[in-house]
Image (cartoon, rainbow, N blue to C red; front, side):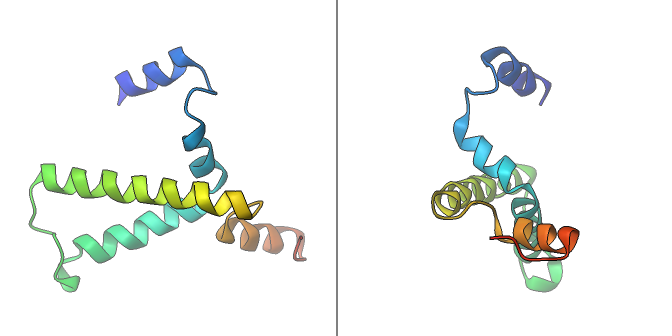
Length: 97
């Protein structure tokens, strides 16, 4: 993780534009990944709770990659993510366009 952070810092903030979409939709991606991972790995869901670490890491990275891809597509059409819009409406007390 530290090596990855150093690589990003060395290359500069604009080097990974596809990650910017996930950053702009951070709440939606965080909640989405939490729900998705719970459904995939929860023992009560009959999921991959007993899978090895390598399988769990691969599934988590694939899920994050899918959410980043969905974020890029979403932000091409809308200004902010769905949960960010709800959060903003709750903060300001009105729905913003």
